[in-house]
Image (cartoon, rainbow, N blue to C red; front, side):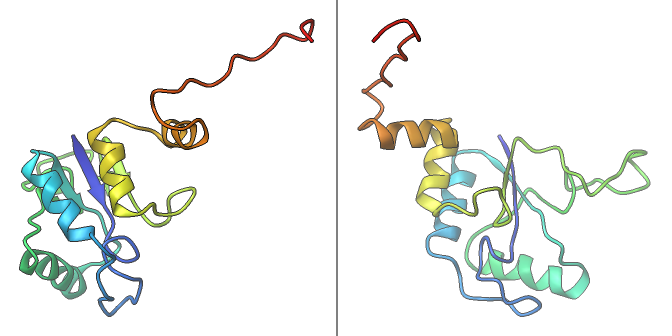
Length: 142
């Protein structure tokens, strides 16, 4: 799976242009996803020196990205006529996500177990994955 991951507010607390404290379990989760052969792309508004600092911060903690702000490492404007900052990823992990950023344990579970928010809410509401939502009654049933 190709996973695009934001930096500020997602991997670290939002202190841009400085680098904030790590959000608990962010780098540990990213390393587990890499070990499971997911391709991680750092997807950040950072550019130049600020981007280099973010990449190095992650590298020092054992997180090596497949690509940074591009679909694949070799991608440039010259070798891709349709070069765009819009990535082709299966999943985007971002603090600006509708509903906010779940904790990293939930993110890992969603990715590795192919769960959606709806799955997780249903499980929480009905006591786990072994329970099923009650069937809706038709309007004519009392």
